[in-house]
Length: 198
Image (cartoon, rainbow, N blue to C red; front, side, top):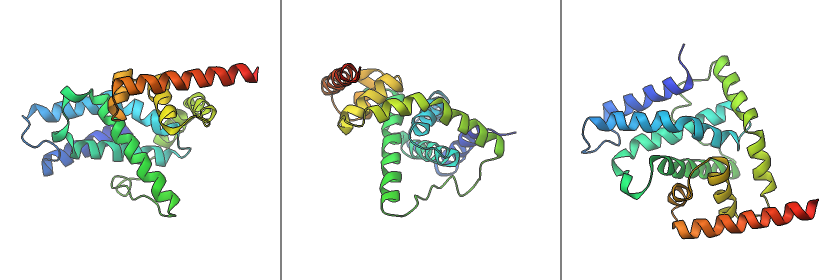
């Protein structure tokens, strides 16, 4: 039986082999690098979407779209500019923003991968479990509602998703100094609000 991860990896391999997607002039080991980026980050990216969405199919679709975009743009990834995790989370943030914009316009985002394969019941159960496991993270994000978007993103990427401040800065395309200031300000505001609630 295929899992969402193995099917997603198969789609990335197929896309990369048939179109040379994202590999550009990179050596043959680039496909292995891409697979490593996928395997290392598919769980955290899926959790990122599980904190935002309550439907397993949506989590799977957005995760798949993120890695299809990563495969398509892999030739432009420069590890000297940031870690693979920061790069992938930057893509995930853009995928989610596109999804939200499409929903706000009353249109459903068309995800290339979703049209090819509906989720089997065991994968739906697995993703529903991931969504449940992210309940605490969703509660934290809801508690951060009074923070600015940039402060909330900093808290989520560092304190929930576990990225380093440098990786979070790279994902948000800001300097590490700016990210640390946002993070410090957000944590201070959350502590202050928590004390006032007691």
